[in-house]
Image (cartoon, rainbow, N blue to C red; front, side, top):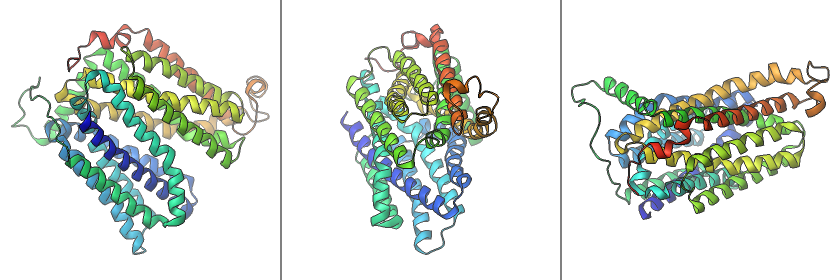
Length: 433
């Protein structure tokens, strides 16, 4: 695990630096535009390049040196932020500059993650894959928990220019960590024909199809991918609508406390899965904690109560790293090593599409459909309104309840599929125990 831990430390520092910078940029954009639409556009510009470049990332991750890909991608993302820092320093920074840099940084990050996920099973024994992925979720949790607090402190002390400098240092640190280690290469055996005479476009298309066909030809992995598309769609709607829901009955300061408690839940969840290791049937972790996530959404929408919603947020964030770490471990142990980057790229593209769809439909559905249903004189005020209340935010609460039930039903239905339920026993491990 020594090599993995060195890489993990580098990623932890890089994620923390990126988190602080993203927080600072979001504050800068909102303060200079006062537009929620332009603020939300940054989220879209983070997802779209990731979707577009995922096929390229998968092909490169399986055909090129993965360490070089990760190092060069980190350098590219760092240069994108450096460009913003220079423009800010000389007084010529515009909103569209941030959009372009955000898209570029997202594209570079998209190039490295399939390679990074494919490296983990080469370094970590199969029985410790859940623990290793849990450690990565720890890095994400620490970033989400500390970045807003640290970002606010740094903005007040060294201002946004200093934040950019620290972010540059974090990128350099991450690159140095990767340069210090040697990564083993996957076997060169491939189930595909030689592509020496094919054009680059043909190779890219063929590699993408190989990743897709690998998933669809193994029904357990296919249904696992579909279930995670559903899960991330539901997650995406909560990302968009949770703040409007909670601010309908509480203040921003209380909301900050609620989200901090949620971040603590995520940190505890990552510590739990990293220590436990996930057990032998990791698919049960996925299904069981997805049901818990659905129940949390249902609870959050049921009543405008701070304590109830805080408990729901805590349990939801606690379950998140357990679900993701267990799923990643299943994929890493069942996908051929020389195809993992391609498979993870296709999987990531599907998930990003689910998130993008959620981002696009959640707001209009809440504003135009659900909120009008539960106004004081709305169509459902005399029925559903008597149970969950009426007024601002209650339509979003109903939407949360429906999404929670939808996730529970989807998870239970998936459990009834023997291909998904038995995916770990029916498909052989790519690395022996």
